[in-house]
Image (cartoon, rainbow, N blue to C red; front, side, top):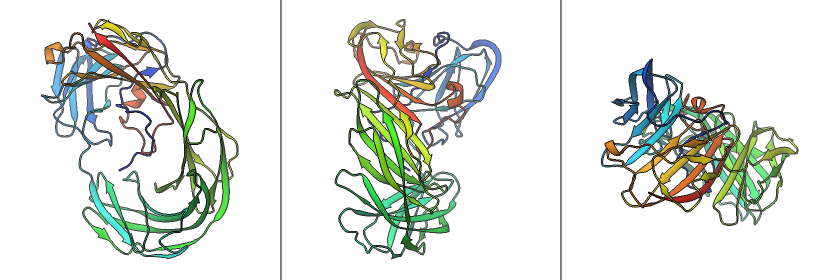
Length: 418
């Protein structure tokens, strides 16, 4: 199932809260208290992840088949480490949590196999298929149990593969939409729309009678005024037409370096617009993405400020002598959860650090076979997503919404270990 957020850089979701305050504790925190932590480990779709070692202080356990774990005698705030099963050398650290029932995202967990089905039917009305040059016809299925599936179609009857997690059958709606784009990929107009509700798809099942009757739609528009951070230029401008049932269409995608975006949207069919703007530096070592959701037709001049990316200030890019006693310090993004991904080469351990401040240290996991190798180069990718009140707010669910976060930034640097 797709996540709509465009990705301008690789992001493992290592989250660090960017709200200032006191420095976080180091990775030995959490032991010697009277609190019981009963949480779970999940993948990117919120599905349980079993057989993961969970460490808090000197206490350890393994997640069960439901991803659940319980550790007692914990003091808050606490640090929790998730270790992948051997022989993988992958560690995820959440630092200075206070929530006693966290849902912890394991960024290394491979997604489980979803339930799947096929929906199809005839398309009547609208422009004939295949569409003429510059005209796109798409279908999309939306339901509460899926992050939506969509595809462009060139013939009738159409077929659409649908994936979801959870129940053995889901009920939703199929939408069909026809729109036009110019040579830049910018949407220029809408021709027809149709919807069929009450479509039930069973796991491994096929529906062939979800027929669509397309009819003309009324035009409206939305406009957005976007500002990029200093030193960044806009490189992508995406528009999605969305519906309350979760169906969506990626109707516009251009790379124009223009902060003012004014595009048509369909009116009178219950649709709204999501707008995504992305910017990078010329060397592509820093990027910033921001989104506006649920813009009603007729919205004019909506402001979208892309945040200035967080930057790792210590150690300096290219520094050497880094070890588990080195403070890693960065400039925070307000209302952001900061993610630090540290990766070497070959069989070097990879560390994903979740922290509640603007600094952290690499955890000393040498006793677990994940010692930091000496004299090895490491890449440091610092990603920020938001808005979130704090790290505890993120681990309330442990997953990012299907449409992506409100903003995301990223920067790349590197160092050499001691």
